[in-house]
Image (cartoon, rainbow, N blue to C red; front, top):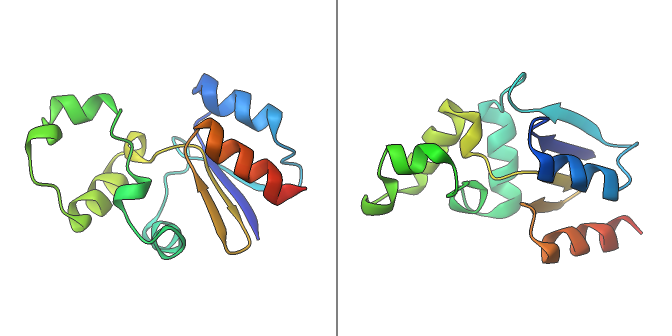
Length: 115
């Protein structure tokens, strides 16, 4: 299975989608079609952590003052399901591998996986 979760209004997501051959990928735009519980659970199984999937740069983190709170794995799951901006993006799933975020290292590993 090849799937990508992205935000169409995110310039970084758009840049990565142009860099990576995604013709074979099922695409899910997370604002118009939010991630559901089963999809998040699949990502959790592959990543091993909800925290790894959590976008700490989301504006709501500051609004909710999450930096100064003790946030549990269950909290990360709840936040991601409640608000699409809390999912670190893009998230690529290639068979049993998951690539989370937009760091150069992650994008390079994804490109290597696809060659």
